[in-house]
Length: 210
Image (cartoon, rainbow, N blue to C red; front, top):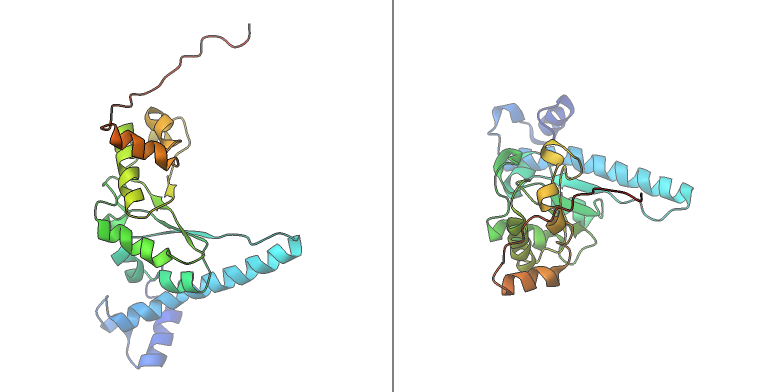
């Protein structure tokens, strides 16, 4: 994320004859100008990775980008449309629809917010994977959220901090459901059956071999 670093301030003054520090934070000219920093970074990254892939005899090295919600991307210098139009990013991962990266709030409760990202990537080579927040919820909640997002055109999900035995990375109570969320037909069947309780499957391991 970028702010008022000297190269950006100086180049804006050169282009517009005004000091951006004297403008409103959301002045559209300043926001567009500030986006150039991360876009240029992604262009350099793409060029470097394409060169490396060629040297290694590999296919394209893909780039994934975790981003903010619809309103906060531009405010923080992220020009997603240009990234996608120029093929700079292969997978776009909106972290949450909640403000300020609030991972404790329920994400994607507004269909318009979801459709914004679906339409942004639709018909392009960039895949969309929505990050599901909050982390620790009943398995039924995850199934219901997946069903809602499938209906809105989302095809991929992402989980931040989802592998570990302790703390916020421990999804053990819902893991049997999470690992099957990619099977859309199972989710749809569960909804048709009235969303029955999924419980928590635990199999105590008492002996291995002898």
